[in-house]
Image (tube, rainbow, N blue to C red; front, side, top):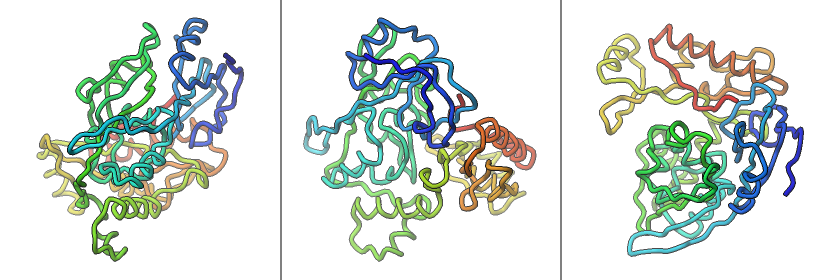
Length: 336
């Protein structure tokens, strides 16, 4: 077992922040974690996967655990579903493509979401009308105190909008080792959200397939969102705020173009990117910290911005939205 010291985290976060980890350890199974916990103080610890949802504002004076659990396996199937287990360290989009190649349906709308499989349940990742919880079956997670692997069902995870028990109640207590998806043998197409139907028409798709939907989502995301390999970013920086219908109706009178999407619970989801753009931030740049020119919801590092500069810009954006619309923006990115 080798714990590294004073390791640069630049390769492990898509914002490209050159923060240093006091200690760094890459693991690939529960046995390695057990050995680590027996030897190392775990009170100041951070688990990293793809690093696509984190903003470092300084060095991390603790232990960074890098999830290197790999593998994609069909573990069982029944009349209607395939059950696919993926290691927590697998790249999420790679798993999506793996499933699409085999006609396992359900994750096509979740194409091109950056990050690792293990991070997916923590955030309850979602895009274009589909959330992870809709294809989730169970996960296995290593508890850092009792040193045992526990199974979590969909109900155990307490999924909410970009939320789960792993973000609050069990924060920093578990390491997600693998996730099992329940995928459909007969596809259920979701094309009503965003510009999917329009993109499918542009693609001249006459025979709807999960592969076509995936490609439409990839096209849309690629046209709107910067590639972190070219411009450092962590995707959507803020969550889409949710407001009661009465608040939405009141805002709609003042701002007739305000988009809103009905939630199953009755509230209305607003488009954070629209709110930010209306406040004039789209394409804004101060030094190397900025708001992307094609998508106001994405904050970017054009080269040498610090985490504190990105965070400061996000605070200014949130204040302006609050002043103009009376709506609170909540960060989706985790600040460390």
